[in-house]
Image (cartoon, rainbow, N blue to C red; front, top):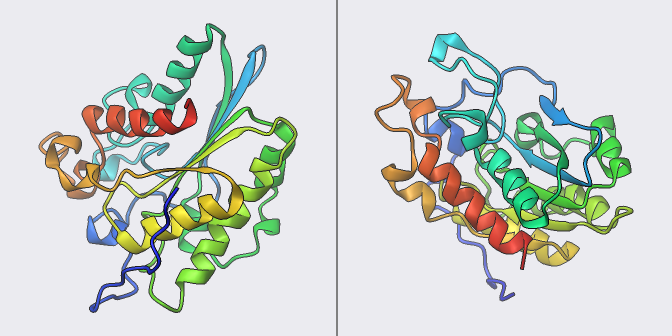
Length: 241
């Protein structure tokens, strides 16, 4: 892996998150780490950390009435469930899985991770595969905040890399292009021995979004079925090599 020697920052950077830039600040309400899981009888375990792109509960006021990755047309078409299904097909075995929305942590990435017992429980659960696909809700990263954001990602990742089953771990850059966050994510992967998946180009194209399928632009700027499949493909390329 070749790391960039410098992180690129916008000359007009503000504390605005990429979610705000995409009119998606109304997503991920509340402070709880929303999760969904299927546990029991699986031959292997898959843990996926994301945000509204991985899991979002119903919010009719913005035109979203489902409980899966926004804005996929069906649960089995969001990137998290596609990753699980692909791993099951490759292995010929059923998986247990756990999907968590970490938007609260993204927005408060300097918080003490020890105050979130769910994270320690995930390490104890000993997954075989881990995907960490976050960053869209984090405030703008600048020269001052980049070390703390990188440390946050590394601190989240390292205990999972070192957990009992020594899982394959992939860190994915944000869907909405953000050079500084992508570089911080790449560095965190290198620091922890995880693999890095660059999804930056996907968010540049409207064909990967749900444009025209939802009235609320924040929902519509999320990946549609094609974008979800491409996100899964990028992650799986690193997760299975």
